[in-house]
Length: 414
View 1 (spheres, rainbow, N blue to C red):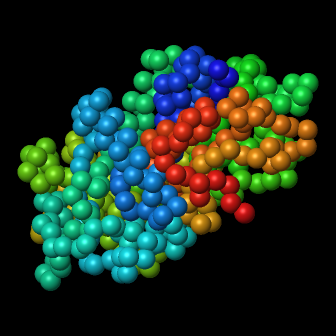
View 2 (cartoon, rainbow, N blue to C red):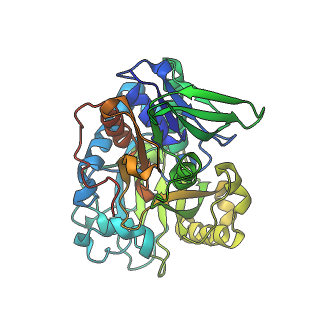
């Protein structure tokens, strides 16, 4: 079995390593991560919302598979305690417009609410205890029972990586892939990586390379294949977030009311998302920017925090979480975050083998499961939700096995 190098140890990369290790020697799998801090972007700072059937036809099978894989992993490894896995209820404070339009694929471009892709019929619901109410408002449930859930993505990512390492998967971090080497047939034969602390270089013999570097994937591809004129069609979408604690959301509240995912439309281009998580946390996000420059490393994101953006989220928290007579001091902000999600023009992820003709002149890969350069990126707001399904089908594809979901519409397009 050929060795496999995975470039990017976020949740997509670690999921892929996890599923690869079920069918090949784990020691033949190499995870390469350039950031000195693991899970410093979306894998650690996303909302962690999971949906089963909020997707358009192109990604529906993958979404359903991934939702089921999340459930099975949580049951097997005690996900409720280890990474906050919980069934959830999705709600709005006002009916989403044209809920049957399935606009989820263009969410990243028009700032729409993900509630527009909800699969359930809107029904009157009961407000969670942490939600501030106004006269005349109405809480509506927009998800069917058992079709949405949530996790703490950082804890899930850490769990997956720990499982991989315990199996024998090799982690190189912080390390940067700097070149591809080919054999006498011009076929990919190894990846040269540089330890960014010691500046030492190491060649990892391999015939399969998988790029799972999120918003940084185009940069990784260009570095490895400098003679290629092909550009990966992936850009970044920055998103600020807060994690807060409130006396209105405790273990007792969780046990009696359950977790909720609240989707709102505050103003054009701003659709707040508020998730009450296990463990007393409430996550707020929804303020996104396609113009925020991508930092050199994921760990540098925190240096680019926008104080106006954070203040806007704080204002939203006060409006949503405060109760009569309360102030911002009555809830505690425990984390401010900024992450960069990989997005595509049509809003669909790209999962598949990159054709050899895109690798540049005089670069080829071995045929079939013996080789190939693969890509999994561009999941937008659904990276955590689709992570396990993506890892599973990508591993199956790379190993030449039957795919568990139809992803025929998710390869490179155009």
